[in-house]
Structures are given as structure tokens and as C-alpha cells.
Length: 167
Image (cartoon, rainbow, N blue to C red; front, side):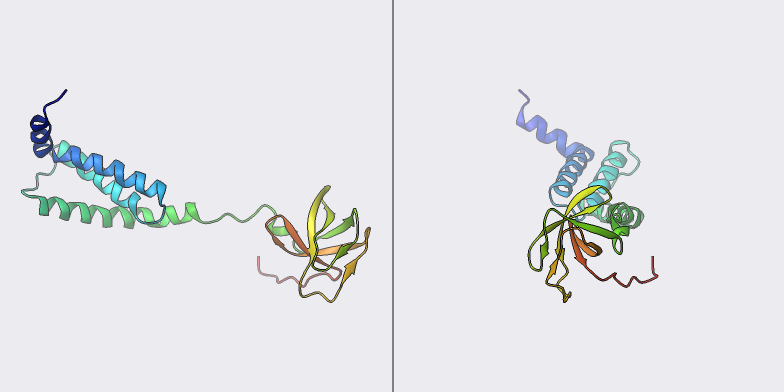
């Protein structure tokens, strides 16, 4: 078992190892609570630890190390912010083009305020009459139109929706 004083002396003489440990801690924090900047801090700590271990930089005191750390955090945030934002941007749903397509009521009539079923592209999907509709009931077998969706629930009406040309 290593002697505590030996370990303490090692850590005092090897700040790079401390920064590598901090890098792991920051990245774990980012994984457990995304969006708080732990990734940028983690990459900065990893970079600083590597620079210290490789004797590329040799700060004279902890204040200089912290200055390097904050500078590297800003550097990595500037470099990685936009690419990560693009990666994290929600993708357009595979079903985004369904609004304005016809479906057929199946199984039973759809009553306003209650969920029914429609057949869309060969699949039976849950549907509900859109709140803004004047229609109170849609009969089984009737062809209707998808106006919107909420998750896997289609919001439908007997009238075809007016679609904007922006896409």
C-alpha cells in the first residue's frame, strides 16, 4: 500500500496528473448533467495535463496554471461550440412531411375530444380531431387529412389543411 506522504509528494510534483483526473471529473459531470460546459472544461484540463506532463509548459505557480486552464476552456469552447451545436440540433422527424396527407378512419368513428384510429401508409395510427375543427364526429371509412402531430398522435380534420410553401 502506498505511503500517503509519498502520494502527496508525487501529486505536488506532478500537477499534470491532477489536471488529467480533473478532466475525467469534468467529463463525467458533463455526461451526468449535459449542457453546463463540463466538456469544454474537461478538454481544457486534459490539454493542460498533457502540456504539463510533456513539459511543454511550466507555470511557476497555481495562478498561472488556472490562467492556462481558463484560457484553454475559452479556446475549446470557441472551437467546439458550433460543431457540437450542429450535432445536438434535433433532426427533422422522418414523419415531418405527413401533414396534409390523407388518412382513412378505421375501427370506429372518431369523436371530438377522444382518440380514434386511422390508417396511414399501411399502418394503423392513433388520431384525434384537431381542436380548431367544427367537426364533432368523423365516420369510420371516411377519408380525412392530417393537420398536425403530437408524438405519434395525428391531429386530423375533414378539411385539407392549408400548407405554407416554406420548406
